[in-house]
Image 1 (spheres, one colour):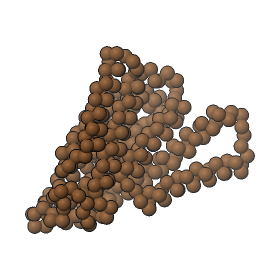
Image 2 (cartoon, one colour):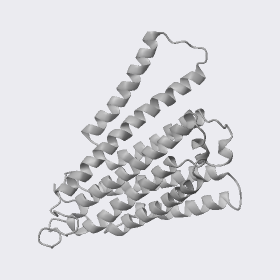
Image 3 (spheres, helix red, strand yellow):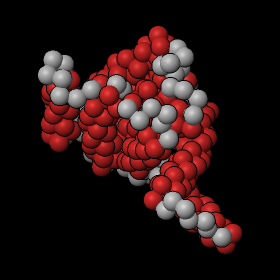
Image 4 (cartoon, helix red, strand yellow):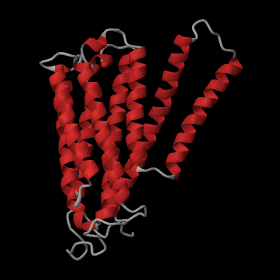
Amino acid sequence: MPPWQRVVSRVSTVALTVAFAAVAYLGTLTGAEILARGLQGLEAPAIGGALLTGIASAAGGWLAYRAGIELRTRDLATLLFGFLTIGTVFAMLTAADPRWWERHFSDLGAGSGAGSWAFNGTVVVAGLLVATIGSYIGRDLHRWLGDRALRGIASVVVLFALTGLALACVGLFPVQAAPLPHNIAAFGTLGLFAASAAAVMLVMPLRPRALVLTTAGAAAGIVVALALWRPLEVYSAAGLEAVAVGIAFAWLTTLVRTIGDLAPDASRPSRVPSLLRRGPTGRPDSTSSPSGGKVGS
């Protein structure tokens, strides 16, 4: 690999290490909180606590081991949704205001209790995961299309990285402490995610019907969700946010599965020494497949 491709790979590895540590940590805390509420008054002996700790450690180690063997982009999308769910559930269980749902999810990050740092930390790590997913989508697109599409692929990776940064800023600037930066980051996340989706669709030389229908359905679903929030007032802003995240996850899952099916499994080192140039001789990559089929490394 050229130096820039190695840097992208290593940065993604560091990001995934942080993400898996956060998943294991919050998953353990959430499980403990649920057990504490369901088994009130239970005092586990030392051996019981050691067994629970061992089980949690084994589960976290197993997840990381599986990722080390083979990690696909679709696995990252599932990890992102699972991590958001775990972190949000823990934040809800430990929320200082039990009626936060009447407003919006950002209220979970207000205050100084366990729920606030859990929610804000979840959003920050989720932003890191979004940026990493963008890197893996770029990897799959490069395996499929080769160096001839490198400029477009780079724009996809950069847009996903900016989306992840904006999402992380939502957690770094809690709504109670910094409402203006928080709101800018929140709306910026939505706009950048839409731009990332458009960039991916433009780079792909062919768009399978399932992906096109899912994209159209997601757009229609967002419009309906907005109408149910305003002016129909069926649910609060928290309900709208939950629906929007679910729709975005459904679209992202379809996207990564589609690209994963079209891209070859083998690594594809780039022939471009610098992203500022198209190739060592200025010509497109001759090994790419213009028909969009499977290609070798």
